[in-house]
Image (cartoon, rainbow over all chains, first blue to last red; front, side):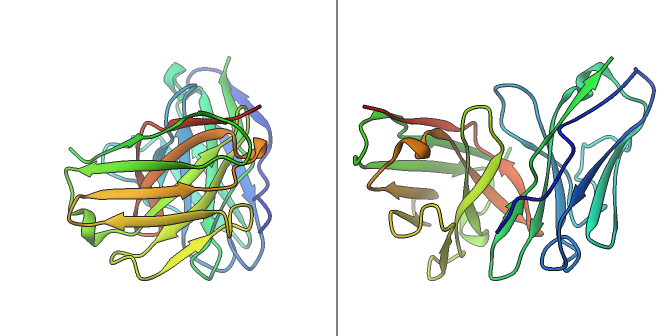
Length: 110
Length: 117
């Protein structure tokens, strides 16, 4: 199972918005409503930010939103704040009880 | 508060064995699928193994199949990963994770495994 494709980096100024893409295939991102997104600060464990394409767990700010078109999912972060600077990973269910992660995107707040 | 705490990591030589543990608290451990995810230094996340709620179904990534074994003891609220025939490329931080709605919703703090001669 190949990793999902994400851009290596993205950036924005405080208050601006940034969108990260996650491209897979019809066998993963495009085939199931089980895309999730994770935020990881340096030296820390990942944190779930979005599940089932667009749902937010309790406690995650509504500045974070998820969507999908075909085999590409996206994470949008609006009103960028300094604490949003982190690595972000997407993940998708990929049949036969397998999961695949994205290559990761480093978000920089300028 | 839902928590996972990994232990058992360390430094060992190629070909060696190690067993990781993941102690769960704050939730009904026996009701959730559990998984192990690893992250090599400076690299991305890789889901390497999963286990069903009662332990009767397991799966593995090709990179660890035949060498690693996942198991759980619901009476002890503990998840395990037996790692044999370790290779340099197994060097990583190993996280256990609780699954909910096909997402990794709770993660442990991770335990470092270094394989080097």
